Length: 469
Image (cartoon, rainbow, N blue to C red; front, side):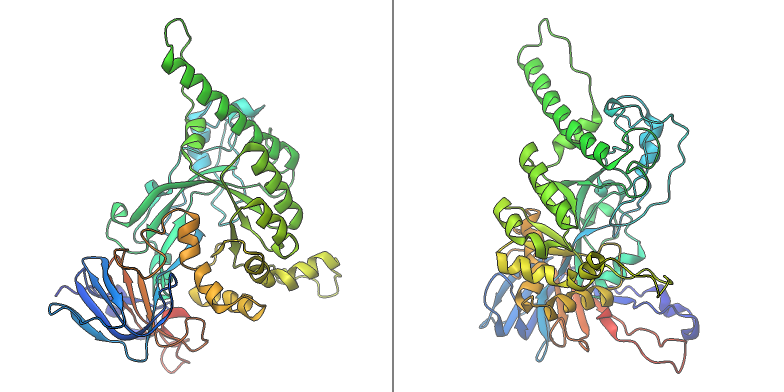
Protein backbone atom coordinates (compact mmCIF):
# COMPACT_ATOMS: atom_id res chain seq x y z
CA UNK A 1 0.00 0.00 0.00
CA UNK A 2 1.17 3.47 -0.80
CA UNK A 3 2.25 5.56 2.14
CA UNK A 4 2.96 9.30 2.29
CA UNK A 5 5.07 10.71 5.12
CA UNK A 6 5.06 14.39 6.03
CA UNK A 7 8.39 16.16 5.65
CA UNK A 8 8.56 16.85 9.36
CA UNK A 9 9.70 13.25 9.91
CA UNK A 10 12.87 13.96 7.99
CA UNK A 11 14.22 16.73 10.23
CA UNK A 12 15.59 16.58 13.77
CA UNK A 13 12.97 16.51 16.50
CA UNK A 14 14.36 19.55 18.25
CA UNK A 15 13.91 21.59 15.09
CA UNK A 16 10.42 20.34 14.28
CA UNK A 17 7.58 22.91 14.28
CA UNK A 18 4.94 22.78 16.99
CA UNK A 19 2.01 22.26 14.61
CA UNK A 20 0.58 18.76 14.35
CA UNK A 21 1.38 16.93 11.13
CA UNK A 22 -0.29 13.86 9.70
CA UNK A 23 0.35 10.56 8.01
CA UNK A 24 -1.88 9.46 5.16
CA UNK A 25 -2.03 5.72 5.61
CA UNK A 26 -3.81 4.81 2.40
CA UNK A 27 -5.48 6.32 -0.61
CA UNK A 28 -9.12 5.60 -1.40
CA UNK A 29 -10.03 2.03 -0.60
CA UNK A 30 -12.50 0.03 1.47
CA UNK A 31 -12.70 0.53 5.24
CA UNK A 32 -15.04 -0.70 7.94
CA UNK A 33 -15.14 1.40 11.12
CA UNK A 34 -16.47 -1.28 13.42
CA UNK A 35 -18.19 -1.10 16.81
CA UNK A 36 -18.08 2.72 17.02
CA UNK A 37 -20.44 5.25 18.49
CA UNK A 38 -21.78 6.85 15.30
CA UNK A 39 -23.11 10.41 15.45
CA UNK A 40 -24.95 10.59 12.14
CA UNK A 41 -26.37 14.12 12.78
CA UNK A 42 -29.15 13.42 10.27
CA UNK A 43 -30.62 10.74 12.55
CA UNK A 44 -30.34 9.13 15.99
CA UNK A 45 -26.93 8.28 17.41
CA UNK A 46 -25.95 4.63 16.86
CA UNK A 47 -24.25 3.51 20.07
CA UNK A 48 -22.62 0.42 18.55
CA UNK A 49 -22.47 0.79 14.80
CA UNK A 50 -20.33 0.24 11.73
CA UNK A 51 -19.55 2.64 8.90
CA UNK A 52 -18.35 1.15 5.62
CA UNK A 53 -16.34 3.36 3.25
CA UNK A 54 -15.64 2.31 -0.33
CA UNK A 55 -13.99 4.31 -3.12
CA UNK A 56 -14.49 7.63 -1.37
CA UNK A 57 -18.16 7.18 -0.49
CA UNK A 58 -20.12 5.90 2.48
CA UNK A 59 -21.37 2.48 1.39
CA UNK A 60 -23.29 1.58 4.54
CA UNK A 61 -23.97 2.74 8.09
CA UNK A 62 -25.90 0.94 10.78
CA UNK A 63 -25.92 -1.18 13.92
CA UNK A 64 -25.98 -4.64 12.34
CA UNK A 65 -23.59 -4.46 9.42
CA UNK A 66 -21.09 -7.18 8.58
CA UNK A 67 -17.84 -5.68 7.26
CA UNK A 68 -17.15 -6.63 3.62
CA UNK A 69 -14.53 -9.33 3.12
CA UNK A 70 -12.23 -6.91 1.25
CA UNK A 71 -12.46 -4.13 3.84
CA UNK A 72 -9.69 -2.88 6.09
CA UNK A 73 -11.46 -3.34 9.44
CA UNK A 74 -10.66 -0.71 12.07
CA UNK A 75 -11.69 -1.57 15.61
CA UNK A 76 -13.41 1.58 16.89
CA UNK A 77 -14.57 0.26 20.24
CA UNK A 78 -14.59 3.23 22.61
CA UNK A 79 -14.29 5.69 19.70
CA UNK A 80 -16.87 8.07 18.20
CA UNK A 81 -17.39 8.73 14.50
CA UNK A 82 -18.66 12.17 13.46
CA UNK A 83 -19.26 13.73 10.05
CA UNK A 84 -16.25 15.75 8.96
CA UNK A 85 -16.39 19.31 10.31
CA UNK A 86 -17.07 22.21 7.92
CA UNK A 87 -15.79 25.78 8.13
CA UNK A 88 -18.65 27.75 6.61
CA UNK A 89 -16.72 30.94 5.75
CA UNK A 90 -13.00 30.59 5.28
CA UNK A 91 -9.86 31.38 3.33
CA UNK A 92 -8.30 27.95 3.90
CA UNK A 93 -6.63 26.76 0.73
CA UNK A 94 -7.10 30.11 -0.98
CA UNK A 95 -4.00 31.76 -2.40
CA UNK A 96 -5.65 35.04 -1.42
CA UNK A 97 -3.96 37.07 -4.14
CA UNK A 98 -5.46 40.54 -3.70
CA UNK A 99 -8.07 40.68 -6.50
CA UNK A 100 -8.01 44.48 -6.40
CA UNK A 101 -4.69 44.37 -8.25
CA UNK A 102 -6.28 42.61 -11.21
CA UNK A 103 -9.40 44.75 -11.00
CA UNK A 104 -7.42 47.98 -10.98
CA UNK A 105 -5.23 46.88 -13.84
CA UNK A 106 -8.21 45.98 -16.02
CA UNK A 107 -9.71 49.45 -15.84
CA UNK A 108 -12.93 50.69 -17.39
CA UNK A 109 -16.52 49.64 -16.91
CA UNK A 110 -16.74 46.22 -15.29
CA UNK A 111 -12.98 46.16 -14.90
CA UNK A 112 -12.77 47.74 -11.47
CA UNK A 113 -11.08 51.05 -12.34
CA UNK A 114 -9.89 52.70 -9.17
CA UNK A 115 -10.36 49.53 -7.12
CA UNK A 116 -9.84 49.90 -3.42
CA UNK A 117 -8.65 47.10 -1.17
CA UNK A 118 -11.26 46.61 1.53
CA UNK A 119 -10.48 45.30 4.97
CA UNK A 120 -12.29 41.96 4.86
CA UNK A 121 -13.80 40.27 7.87
CA UNK A 122 -12.29 36.85 7.15
CA UNK A 123 -8.68 37.78 6.46
CA UNK A 124 -6.72 40.87 5.51
CA UNK A 125 -4.78 40.54 2.26
CA UNK A 126 -1.66 42.50 1.45
CA UNK A 127 -2.85 45.83 0.04
CA UNK A 128 -2.52 46.08 -3.70
CA UNK A 129 -0.65 49.03 -5.13
CA UNK A 130 -2.75 50.79 -7.74
CA UNK A 131 -1.81 53.75 -9.90
CA UNK A 132 -5.37 54.03 -11.23
CA UNK A 133 -7.19 57.30 -10.53
CA UNK A 134 -9.77 57.35 -7.73
CA UNK A 135 -13.18 56.11 -8.74
CA UNK A 136 -15.73 58.84 -9.46
CA UNK A 137 -18.92 56.79 -9.39
CA UNK A 138 -20.57 53.36 -9.48
CA UNK A 139 -20.10 53.08 -13.24
CA UNK A 140 -16.37 52.56 -12.56
CA UNK A 141 -17.21 49.39 -10.55
CA UNK A 142 -14.77 50.27 -7.74
CA UNK A 143 -13.59 47.50 -5.46
CA UNK A 144 -15.53 44.85 -7.35
CA UNK A 145 -14.16 41.48 -8.45
CA UNK A 146 -17.42 39.54 -8.47
CA UNK A 147 -16.28 37.33 -11.35
CA UNK A 148 -13.44 35.74 -9.35
CA UNK A 149 -13.93 32.19 -8.08
CA UNK A 150 -12.19 30.76 -5.06
CA UNK A 151 -12.02 27.46 -6.96
CA UNK A 152 -9.55 29.10 -9.35
CA UNK A 153 -7.28 30.22 -6.50
CA UNK A 154 -6.94 26.98 -4.51
CA UNK A 155 -3.46 26.17 -3.24
CA UNK A 156 -3.43 22.46 -2.20
CA UNK A 157 -0.24 22.79 -0.15
CA UNK A 158 -1.57 25.61 2.02
CA UNK A 159 -0.39 24.65 5.50
CA UNK A 160 -3.71 25.74 7.02
CA UNK A 161 -5.35 22.79 5.22
CA UNK A 162 -3.31 20.19 7.09
CA UNK A 163 -3.67 22.00 10.41
CA UNK A 164 -7.45 22.16 10.06
CA UNK A 165 -7.71 18.59 8.83
CA UNK A 166 -5.76 17.27 11.82
CA UNK A 167 -8.38 18.92 14.02
CA UNK A 168 -11.27 17.15 12.30
CA UNK A 169 -12.19 19.69 9.60
CA UNK A 170 -12.69 18.00 6.25
CA UNK A 171 -14.38 20.74 4.20
CA UNK A 172 -14.35 24.51 3.97
CA UNK A 173 -16.39 27.10 2.13
CA UNK A 174 -13.57 29.33 0.98
CA UNK A 175 -13.89 32.81 -0.54
CA UNK A 176 -11.73 35.40 -2.29
CA UNK A 177 -11.18 38.53 -0.19
CA UNK A 178 -10.13 42.11 -0.63
CA UNK A 179 -13.06 43.93 -2.26
CA UNK A 180 -16.61 45.05 -1.53
CA UNK A 181 -17.80 42.45 -4.05
CA UNK A 182 -14.98 40.03 -3.30
CA UNK A 183 -15.98 37.13 -5.52
CA UNK A 184 -17.64 33.75 -5.54
CA UNK A 185 -16.98 31.16 -2.86
CA UNK A 186 -16.36 27.46 -3.42
CA UNK A 187 -16.87 24.38 -1.27
CA UNK A 188 -13.66 22.37 -1.08
CA UNK A 189 -12.49 19.21 0.61
CA UNK A 190 -9.33 19.63 2.67
CA UNK A 191 -7.22 17.06 0.86
CA UNK A 192 -5.99 16.49 -2.67
CA UNK A 193 -2.85 16.71 -4.76
CA UNK A 194 -4.54 18.97 -7.32
CA UNK A 195 -6.92 21.85 -6.82
CA UNK A 196 -9.45 20.34 -9.19
CA UNK A 197 -9.70 17.23 -7.02
CA UNK A 198 -10.64 19.32 -3.98
CA UNK A 199 -13.59 21.31 -5.34
CA UNK A 200 -17.09 20.09 -4.43
CA UNK A 201 -18.98 23.15 -5.68
CA UNK A 202 -17.28 25.93 -7.61
CA UNK A 203 -19.71 28.87 -7.18
CA UNK A 204 -21.96 28.91 -4.14
CA UNK A 205 -22.31 32.59 -3.29
CA UNK A 206 -21.03 36.16 -3.62
CA UNK A 207 -19.03 37.46 -0.66
CA UNK A 208 -19.69 41.11 0.19
CA UNK A 209 -17.66 43.11 2.70
CA UNK A 210 -18.10 46.55 4.19
CA UNK A 211 -14.69 48.26 4.29
CA UNK A 212 -13.57 49.46 7.69
CA UNK A 213 -11.53 52.50 8.50
CA UNK A 214 -11.88 56.13 7.59
CA UNK A 215 -14.48 56.91 5.00
CA UNK A 216 -15.69 53.34 4.59
CA UNK A 217 -14.19 53.20 1.13
CA UNK A 218 -10.53 53.42 1.94
CA UNK A 219 -10.33 57.16 1.30
CA UNK A 220 -9.83 56.84 -2.46
CA UNK A 221 -12.79 58.29 -4.29
CA UNK A 222 -16.23 56.74 -4.50
CA UNK A 223 -17.61 55.24 -2.31
CA UNK A 224 -16.16 57.41 0.43
CA UNK A 225 -18.47 56.60 3.35
CA UNK A 226 -20.53 53.82 4.86
CA UNK A 227 -23.64 55.31 3.26
CA UNK A 228 -21.81 55.41 -0.06
CA UNK A 229 -20.82 51.74 0.22
CA UNK A 230 -24.40 50.67 0.92
CA UNK A 231 -25.64 52.83 -1.95
CA UNK A 232 -22.99 51.31 -4.22
CA UNK A 233 -24.00 47.73 -3.36
CA UNK A 234 -27.64 48.65 -4.02
CA UNK A 235 -26.68 50.23 -7.34
CA UNK A 236 -24.78 47.11 -8.43
CA UNK A 237 -27.85 44.94 -7.87
CA UNK A 238 -30.09 47.42 -9.65
CA UNK A 239 -27.65 47.49 -12.56
CA UNK A 240 -27.58 43.69 -12.60
CA UNK A 241 -31.37 43.51 -12.92
CA UNK A 242 -31.35 46.07 -15.74
CA UNK A 243 -28.48 44.20 -17.42
CA UNK A 244 -30.39 40.89 -17.29
CA UNK A 245 -33.47 42.53 -18.75
CA UNK A 246 -31.52 44.21 -21.55
CA UNK A 247 -29.80 40.94 -22.46
CA UNK A 248 -33.10 39.05 -22.41
CA UNK A 249 -34.77 41.56 -24.70
CA UNK A 250 -31.82 41.56 -27.11
CA UNK A 251 -31.63 37.76 -27.26
CA UNK A 252 -35.33 37.57 -28.19
CA UNK A 253 -35.35 40.47 -30.66
CA UNK A 254 -31.80 41.36 -31.81
CA UNK A 255 -32.90 43.00 -35.07
CA UNK A 256 -32.71 46.76 -34.83
CA UNK A 257 -31.47 46.81 -31.24
CA UNK A 258 -28.09 47.89 -29.96
CA UNK A 259 -26.17 45.00 -28.40
CA UNK A 260 -25.74 45.40 -24.60
CA UNK A 261 -22.09 45.80 -23.64
CA UNK A 262 -20.63 42.82 -21.78
CA UNK A 263 -20.02 43.59 -18.10
CA UNK A 264 -18.07 40.91 -16.24
CA UNK A 265 -18.75 42.56 -12.88
CA UNK A 266 -22.49 42.20 -13.36
CA UNK A 267 -22.07 38.73 -14.87
CA UNK A 268 -20.35 37.64 -11.66
CA UNK A 269 -23.16 39.04 -9.53
CA UNK A 270 -25.84 37.35 -11.63
CA UNK A 271 -24.00 34.02 -11.59
CA UNK A 272 -23.95 33.91 -7.77
CA UNK A 273 -26.85 31.83 -6.38
CA UNK A 274 -26.73 33.58 -3.00
CA UNK A 275 -25.03 36.53 -1.33
CA UNK A 276 -23.25 36.83 2.01
CA UNK A 277 -24.01 40.09 3.82
CA UNK A 278 -21.95 41.37 6.79
CA UNK A 279 -24.06 41.75 9.95
CA UNK A 280 -22.31 41.63 13.31
CA UNK A 281 -24.04 44.28 15.42
CA UNK A 282 -27.79 44.49 15.93
CA UNK A 283 -28.11 47.61 13.77
CA UNK A 284 -26.20 45.89 10.97
CA UNK A 285 -28.36 42.77 11.22
CA UNK A 286 -31.57 44.78 10.92
CA UNK A 287 -30.11 46.88 8.11
CA UNK A 288 -29.11 43.81 6.08
CA UNK A 289 -32.45 42.11 6.70
CA UNK A 290 -34.17 45.16 5.23
CA UNK A 291 -31.67 45.36 2.36
CA UNK A 292 -32.11 41.70 1.43
CA UNK A 293 -35.88 42.13 1.43
CA UNK A 294 -35.71 45.31 -0.65
CA UNK A 295 -33.43 43.77 -3.29
CA UNK A 296 -35.11 40.33 -3.13
CA UNK A 297 -31.80 38.60 -2.43
CA UNK A 298 -31.18 35.00 -1.47
CA UNK A 299 -29.07 36.20 1.43
CA UNK A 300 -26.97 34.77 4.24
CA UNK A 301 -25.97 36.97 7.18
CA UNK A 302 -22.46 36.55 8.57
CA UNK A 303 -20.86 37.82 11.77
CA UNK A 304 -23.79 37.59 14.15
CA UNK A 305 -22.14 38.45 17.47
CA UNK A 306 -25.15 40.53 18.49
CA UNK A 307 -27.73 38.08 17.14
CA UNK A 308 -28.93 37.55 20.70
CA UNK A 309 -30.65 40.92 20.33
CA UNK A 310 -32.31 40.23 16.99
CA UNK A 311 -32.87 36.46 16.79
CA UNK A 312 -36.64 36.88 16.42
CA UNK A 313 -36.22 39.39 13.57
CA UNK A 314 -33.84 37.01 11.79
CA UNK A 315 -36.30 34.16 12.21
CA UNK A 316 -39.12 36.28 10.78
CA UNK A 317 -36.95 37.19 7.80
CA UNK A 318 -36.14 33.53 7.20
CA UNK A 319 -32.41 34.14 6.72
CA UNK A 320 -29.63 31.75 7.77
CA UNK A 321 -26.67 33.04 9.78
CA UNK A 322 -22.96 32.27 9.79
CA UNK A 323 -21.64 32.85 13.31
CA UNK A 324 -18.07 34.00 13.79
CA UNK A 325 -16.01 32.00 16.29
CA UNK A 326 -13.71 34.97 16.80
CA UNK A 327 -15.37 36.67 19.73
CA UNK A 328 -14.71 40.34 20.51
CA UNK A 329 -11.75 40.85 22.84
CA UNK A 330 -10.07 43.76 24.50
CA UNK A 331 -7.28 45.16 22.34
CA UNK A 332 -3.93 43.79 23.41
CA UNK A 333 -1.66 46.25 25.23
CA UNK A 334 -4.52 48.73 25.62
CA UNK A 335 -4.54 51.12 28.56
CA UNK A 336 -6.03 49.16 31.50
CA UNK A 337 -7.29 52.44 32.97
CA UNK A 338 -9.26 53.25 29.83
CA UNK A 339 -12.99 53.01 30.45
CA UNK A 340 -14.84 51.21 27.68
CA UNK A 341 -18.48 51.91 26.71
CA UNK A 342 -21.08 49.64 28.27
CA UNK A 343 -22.17 48.53 24.80
CA UNK A 344 -18.66 47.24 24.05
CA UNK A 345 -18.46 45.37 27.35
CA UNK A 346 -21.91 43.89 26.81
CA UNK A 347 -21.05 42.70 23.30
CA UNK A 348 -17.87 41.05 24.55
CA UNK A 349 -19.74 39.33 27.36
CA UNK A 350 -22.77 38.15 25.39
CA UNK A 351 -21.32 37.26 21.98
CA UNK A 352 -21.02 33.55 22.93
CA UNK A 353 -24.78 33.51 23.72
CA UNK A 354 -25.75 34.33 20.12
CA UNK A 355 -25.73 30.67 19.07
CA UNK A 356 -28.11 29.63 21.85
CA UNK A 357 -30.43 32.54 21.03
CA UNK A 358 -30.56 31.54 17.36
CA UNK A 359 -31.13 27.88 18.26
CA UNK A 360 -34.00 28.82 20.58
CA UNK A 361 -35.56 31.01 17.88
CA UNK A 362 -35.32 28.24 15.29
CA UNK A 363 -32.83 30.03 13.03
CA UNK A 364 -30.51 27.87 10.94
CA UNK A 365 -26.91 28.83 11.64
CA UNK A 366 -23.38 27.52 11.12
CA UNK A 367 -20.00 28.42 12.61
CA UNK A 368 -17.02 29.87 10.76
CA UNK A 369 -13.38 30.39 11.66
CA UNK A 370 -13.12 34.13 10.90
CA UNK A 371 -9.38 34.09 10.20
CA UNK A 372 -8.44 31.64 12.95
CA UNK A 373 -6.58 28.55 11.78
CA UNK A 374 -5.97 26.56 14.96
CA UNK A 375 -8.65 23.92 15.60
CA UNK A 376 -7.98 24.11 19.34
CA UNK A 377 -9.00 27.78 19.35
CA UNK A 378 -12.07 27.08 17.23
CA UNK A 379 -13.26 24.26 19.46
CA UNK A 380 -12.66 26.37 22.56
CA UNK A 381 -14.91 29.04 21.02
CA UNK A 382 -17.61 26.46 20.30
CA UNK A 383 -17.29 25.23 23.88
CA UNK A 384 -17.95 28.80 25.06
CA UNK A 385 -21.18 28.80 23.04
CA UNK A 386 -22.19 25.47 24.60
CA UNK A 387 -21.41 26.78 28.09
CA UNK A 388 -23.57 29.80 27.23
CA UNK A 389 -26.63 27.66 26.48
CA UNK A 390 -26.17 26.07 23.05
CA UNK A 391 -27.01 22.36 23.06
CA UNK A 392 -24.20 19.92 22.10
CA UNK A 393 -26.42 18.60 19.29
CA UNK A 394 -26.90 22.15 18.02
CA UNK A 395 -23.16 22.74 18.16
CA UNK A 396 -22.26 19.69 16.08
CA UNK A 397 -24.97 20.54 13.53
CA UNK A 398 -23.56 24.07 13.26
CA UNK A 399 -20.21 22.53 12.28
CA UNK A 400 -21.62 19.96 9.86
CA UNK A 401 -25.12 19.53 8.41
CA UNK A 402 -26.32 23.12 8.88
CA UNK A 403 -23.40 24.48 6.86
CA UNK A 404 -24.03 21.93 4.11
CA UNK A 405 -27.74 22.78 3.99
CA UNK A 406 -27.14 26.54 3.93
CA UNK A 407 -24.95 26.16 0.81
CA UNK A 408 -27.05 23.48 -0.88
CA UNK A 409 -24.52 20.63 -0.66
CA UNK A 410 -26.18 18.52 2.04
CA UNK A 411 -26.71 15.73 -0.51
CA UNK A 412 -22.93 15.32 -0.56
CA UNK A 413 -21.54 16.19 2.88
CA UNK A 414 -22.62 17.14 6.40
CA UNK A 415 -23.90 13.85 7.81
CA UNK A 416 -23.12 10.14 7.89
CA UNK A 417 -25.51 8.68 5.34
CA UNK A 418 -25.23 6.07 2.62
CA UNK A 419 -24.08 7.52 -0.68
CA UNK A 420 -22.49 10.68 0.73
CA UNK A 421 -18.81 11.57 0.42
CA UNK A 422 -16.77 9.77 3.07
CA UNK A 423 -15.72 12.79 5.11
CA UNK A 424 -15.43 11.53 8.68
CA UNK A 425 -13.62 12.27 11.91
CA UNK A 426 -12.97 9.58 14.52
CA UNK A 427 -12.20 10.73 18.08
CA UNK A 428 -11.58 9.02 21.41
CA UNK A 429 -14.38 10.92 23.12
CA UNK A 430 -16.89 13.72 22.81
CA UNK A 431 -15.75 16.08 20.07
CA UNK A 432 -15.97 19.05 22.45
CA UNK A 433 -14.08 17.36 25.28
CA UNK A 434 -11.00 19.18 26.51
CA UNK A 435 -8.92 16.00 26.45
CA UNK A 436 -10.42 14.51 23.30
CA UNK A 437 -7.98 13.40 20.63
CA UNK A 438 -8.65 12.94 16.94
CA UNK A 439 -7.55 9.42 15.97
CA UNK A 440 -8.45 9.29 12.27
CA UNK A 441 -9.74 11.68 9.65
CA UNK A 442 -11.24 10.56 6.34
CA UNK A 443 -11.43 13.02 3.46
CA UNK A 444 -12.95 11.78 0.21
CA UNK A 445 -12.35 8.29 1.58
CA UNK A 446 -8.61 8.86 2.12
CA UNK A 447 -7.51 8.01 5.67
CA UNK A 448 -5.32 10.37 7.67
CA UNK A 449 -3.85 9.91 11.13
CA UNK A 450 -2.84 13.07 13.00
CA UNK A 451 0.56 12.58 14.62
CA UNK A 452 1.26 13.88 18.14
CA UNK A 453 2.38 17.47 18.47
CA UNK A 454 6.03 18.05 19.24
CA UNK A 455 6.82 19.09 22.81
CA UNK A 456 6.82 22.85 23.36
CA UNK A 457 10.41 24.06 23.45
CA UNK A 458 11.86 20.89 21.92
CA UNK A 459 12.93 17.78 23.82
CA UNK A 460 11.77 17.53 27.39
CA UNK A 461 9.02 20.11 26.95
CA UNK A 462 5.36 19.67 27.73
CA UNK A 463 3.73 17.45 25.13
CA UNK A 464 0.77 18.80 23.18
CA UNK A 465 -2.40 16.90 22.32
CA UNK A 466 -2.89 15.44 18.87
CA UNK A 467 -5.82 16.56 16.80
CA UNK A 468 -5.65 20.17 17.96
CA UNK A 469 -8.62 20.05 20.35
